[in-house]
Length: 80
Image 1: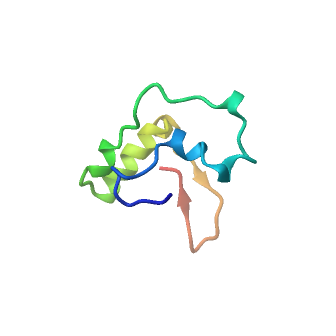
Image 2: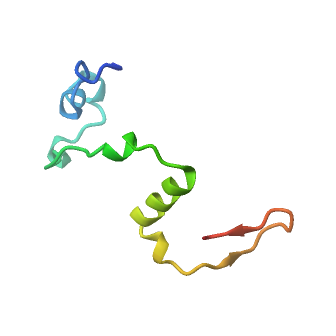
């Protein structure tokens, strides 16, 4: 089932139809995505700070006010 070559991989639907998953499946609850997964971000060459900024922005955390978190004095932690 595990393939490195994306062209040879099973789709999620095909994988779920495999007998291994029979005991875990609830076909009534399964849905299919209406659009393909966009992996374009994974191919970008970004610095750590650029990645951090994109991820925080994606999760809506850039709008959270910066607060000081309690931590040991040798390891200060900030949310921004």
